[in-house]
Image (cartoon, rainbow, N blue to C red):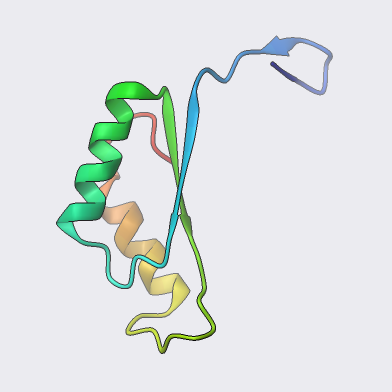
Amino acid sequence: MAKSKKGEDKDMGKVAIYPGSFDPITYGHIDVVERALEIFDKVIVAIAVNEEKRPLFSVEERLHMVKAFFKDTPRSS
């Protein structure tokens, strides 16, 4: 359990972190998030940078795409 700054207990529930380059995000990625939301209370999509790859989109563009896909999805960040 995480403590808030005021000392109150704050239960975050079950949280999943889904890391990847998402360059670009695909329907397969979206399916994984949707399935994870059936199991977890919250899913955090973490956009990674792979220095060995030449990305098609910038991190900012990928972040924008991910946010656009999941803008109406509750419990994803």
